[in-house]
Length: 384
Image (cartoon, rainbow, N blue to C red; front, side, top):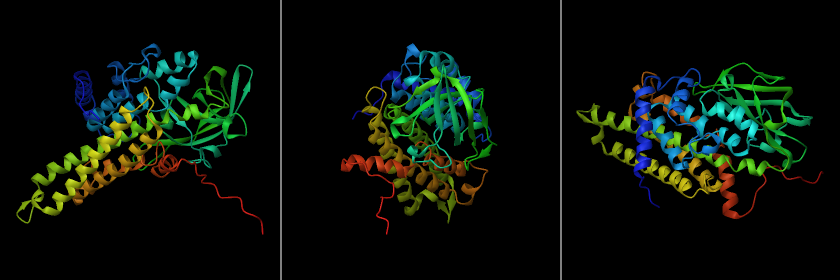
């Protein structure tokens, strides 16, 4: 596998890094609200919709180039990395891939201009990793589709303009589909804003006879597998962010142990720390290789689901371990909010759950290993 970048790819990465240092560095560790200013700046400089076709208003770039931009921006400003994810890797891709011409004109164009934010409305109070347990329903009514139900754990929910809502068009698994819902749709409401450990806001989304145009349906009965195929892109965006943050934590820790002295000599001279940092480097390099493998082997811009699962699960775990070890190298100072080390740990920890938990991803990997899908549901047993 060739890990070298073309001159054009290097220029794109460097351009994103330069923009981030110039425009985003001052808000790098902001914890209140979505990075709207960053999103608009990214849009103005052609860094939204990187892998979306030019015919749909995107940049027509490769998945690798989107990953490079994600890492370049996130290393400088994790807060602005949220904007890169939302405008390139998240639910926006579902709209770009499966949206009707009307949705692309009315919703996608707004998102690409940096004027909107879309969430993935999947989780429900009784349906997290068990997607097929979701209860939100959708029914056609003339030129409209009507939704009833509730979604939870919607990151940046208080600020979104749209949500791609996963719902049931019928009682069977094959009847699961998705609808784009604007927040001004009749029958839509939000619950109170709450916060994750990372500081990001989330809220419930409520649908009470919520009515949206029929053209806003992305998929209905029989299309769930088609919709799920795009999740590998989101997972690689997630992994790329985790890796970038872990690399930043690692680099800060390296500089610290070079300068910090205890017992009359720099910390870097202690073999215990040398081995620790060597292990951290091994973890980071292995994660980078798995991400690049998934990107290199992608069919067009759709990565193999197993390779994406391996890359995300491994990167999430090693990134968290590296950030945690980097914090430890600072001692009490690392645990203080005066430094961003504790912030790195908290942000990365959330990505081990978002976009497919590291445990659920192992189910995908196991299915590929054994060539068989294993149900996680309790077997039906004979009543005694």
